Length: 258
Image (cartoon, rainbow, N blue to C red; front, side, top):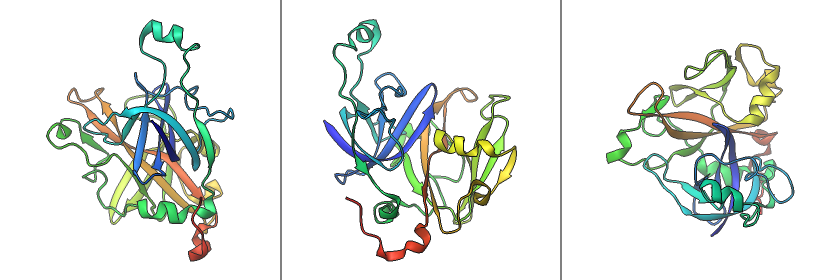
């Protein structure tokens, strides 16, 4: 089944990628998952040789919905079959590459993205930075992807996260209706932008983000992590940082993208 979507996240996940976005057929959010885990960058590279990026409109062949209790938006992408045989036959029976179908220009994005923006204060049911995985056994999550637009996010550079000592990490600190959040950022493009920053807390101004620009954050409820809790914890992460230059002063004259 081919699905067209606007990409709102292409983030690091283990040694691969996690891609999510908004379906153009009115079907809402979707997260694309592989048969055996994260998507490889080979899979997320489109026909034109580019890796899918934020606001790209993409057509992708999927096997079908693969909802799980903590991530109801999941769809499995067509890809290599599992095991050694699948790897051997992959060059012969290749999955269809993802097709670029245009781009949602930043100037045209507000009418499309504004209806998705969640005001808060809770994220996925609470104001914590994670949810206990067993909670979803009896009460599956209603959603695991959302879009927020905090007024003044602060970008904090730290030395470690989830016990991975010595590793540079970026966290987004922001407020939603009085609730304070500090979530890891796994958007590789934004990580690249933040390379100029030293350790500590930094404002948008230090990243050359203008006052007239809008900054939207795609937030995800992640797969369960069992490293510190044998029952599992689902962390919340910023998986996409969407910058809309000059959008604050563009106002109501913007037309919806095609």
